[in-house]
Every structure is written in structure tokens, then in C-alpha cells.
Image 1 (tube, rainbow, N blue to C red):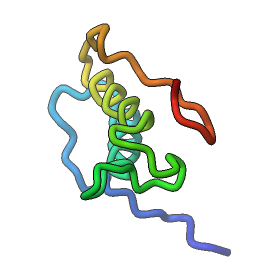
Image 2 (image 1 turned 90 degrees about the vertical axis):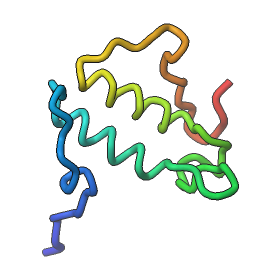
Image 3 (image 1 turned 30 degrees about the horizontal axis):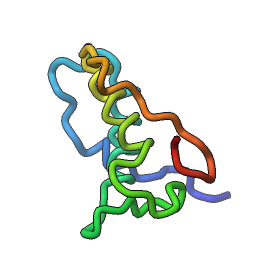
Image 4 (image 1 turned 30 degrees about the vertical axis):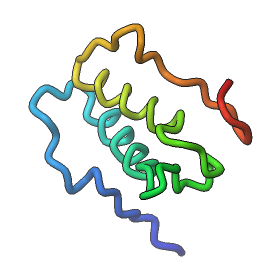
Length: 89
């Protein structure tokens, strides 16, 4: 049987004091880490097909991290739509 204990970097990070939803914050942290732009400013994730940063998953993960801390998202930072296999409109 395969080992199902995946290593997640969010498990090594101390949660901020104001986190009200630890699961959401940790999941969003892992997504944000996987979608950090490379030196050329492109998302390295295969899911993003080399999009320019910030890619929609990174924008949404950052928003989720703010929401998990009880933060209010200002109107100009609404989540970017995710479109599988093509760039957001």
C-alpha cells in the first residue's frame, strides 16, 4: 500500500494568531506556495500553463488566507476566475 502521508509545507509554519479557520489557511498557504512566480515572473505550476504572475490560483489563495484570518477583502481584490486550460478573461 502506498504511503499517503504527504509532506505539506503549511504544517511547518506557525499559524498567525488571528487565524479563525486553520484548515482553510493551511490549504491556501500550500496553493500559494505552489504558484509562486519564478525568476521570469511566470507561474511554474503545470496547471497554469506558464501564465504570468499572479495566476488566478495564487490570487484566490491569497484571498483565502486573508479570509481565514477574519479579514475583509476589498472590492478591487475579488478572486480571479479559474478557467481550466485557458487564461482568465
